[in-house]
Image (cartoon, rainbow, N blue to C red; front, top):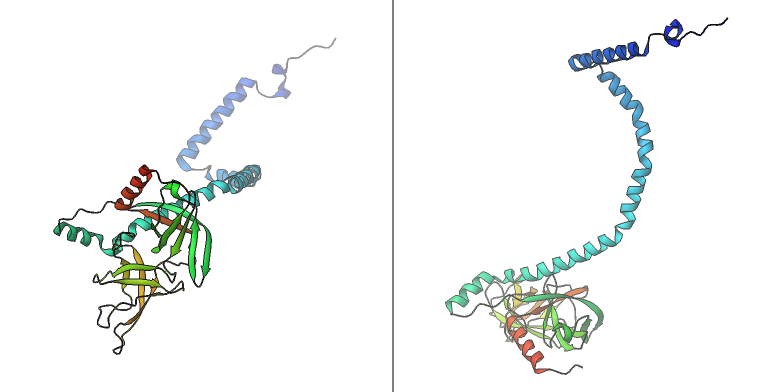
Length: 295
C-alpha cells in the first residue's frame, strides 16, 4: 500500500521554509555590513543602474513627450498675454523716466528758490494706433481712446523714446493726433544742456525737424538734447523731443540753419502714451462737470 510523505520530510524539497528565511536574513545582514564598511556593493549597484537606465528612459518617454506637448501648446496664449503686459509696463516705465533726462532735480531746486509750487506727477495711459496718414503734407494718426477716456484736444502724446505729437480732435471712442513732423506743427523746446529756448517745427519728414529762430551766436551744438520747455501749457517740461543734428552758422543771415532728429521713430510707432498733467486734468474735470456734448 502507498504511503503519503509530507514535503517537509522529503529531502528533495530542501531545507524547511523557516530555515530558508533565516539563511536569507543572515546573508542580507552580512552583505549590508560589508557594503557599509568596504563599499563592496558599489560596483554591483552601478552595473544594475546602467542596465536599468534604458528601461527607465523608455518607460518615462511617453510622460516626457506629453509634458512637452502640453507646455508647448497650451501655454501659447498665456505667453502672448505676458508679453503684451510686459510691453505695456516697459512703455509706462520709459515714459515716466524721460523726465529725468531734463534734470528734474535741478528744476525742483529752481522752483524752490522761486517759491513756486512743484508740479504734480503726470498721469500716463497707453493707447494703440488704429490708422496713420503719412503723406508729405499731413502727418497724423488715429488712436483707440477718446473723450469717454478723458482725452482732450491739445493733449500731448509720447512713446518710449520721446514726444510723438498731440491730439487735435477728440471723438467719443477715438481721437486724431498730429505728429511733431507735420509741417504745420510747432513745439516749444529748450536745450537740455543750457536751457536755451526755441521752437521746433515739422518739415514733412519723419527724421528731421527745423529750428529756424536761433541766431548765429546761439549756444547750440550738434548732439545737444532738445526737451519740451513747458511753455504753452500743452506739454509738461522735460520730455525728450529731438537731438540736434546740424548747425550751420551763416554770417550773412540773421538766423542759423539748425536741424534736429526726433528722439522717437515717428514712422515706426505702434503704441503711444497720452499724458495728463495736473493743470490739464483739472481743466478736463471742469469741462466734464459742465457737461460738454458728445460729437
